[in-house]
Amino acid sequence: GAVVSQHPSWVICKSGTSVKIECRSLDFQATTMFWYRQFPKQSLMLMATSNEGSKATYEQGVEKDKFLINHASLTLSTLTVTSAHPEDSSFYICSAGSPTDRGSGYTFGSGTRLTVV
Amino acid sequence: AQTVTQSQPEMSVQEAETVTLSCTYDTSESDYYLFWYKQPPSRQMILVIRQEAYKQQNATENRFSVNFQKAAKSFSLKISDSQLGDAAMYFCAVYNFNKFYFGSGTKLNVKP
Image: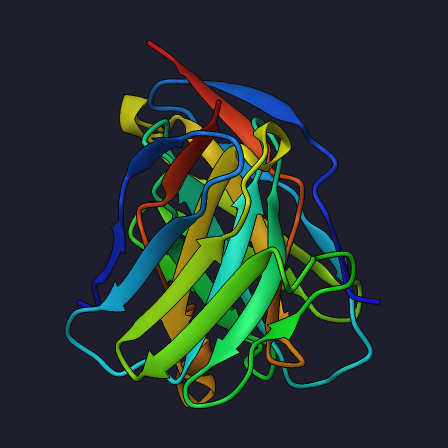
């Protein structure tokens, strides 16, 4: 089946630094990748939609300059949290797929736990 | 706006028994997809079952089945012969307008 690799699984960074999270589709090409944020015991909050070769579409209220998304190839999308602050600490999840395969439900990465100290 | 409502924040079921998780949604589209995802403590999202809105027949996957009522915009998940490994958060989701819309989740506890 389709596999999405997300790295790192967890990361601790100092306040003011940047951290990059990678999302790779290992055995399929993903024209679309979604980035979510999940707070403890809450649902997934869509941050942005990343389409290969074009600029990401951010949801209302998500700072595009703070959460930089790049989808340079059909198998890789990255989320960079710039100038991280403790309030950015959260669980970030990506999912990958293609609108033509929307019935498949897309495939999720295993998530990244970010802690900013 | 697309909304997905899971009215049961938490439920419990005895091992080997059957439990039903409810989900209602709101969409103006006629072509969409519905999903149930499971998120165990590892937090890996796992697809449990999916349903195409244009199909009247309810989807089934082994012990998991859905009751899809399109007119009522209801999409409930039935888990038969519950197992300890079924304990997790369950999220209902609707896909349309090129996005997934998730419900708030139902925590399922399975008692031995």
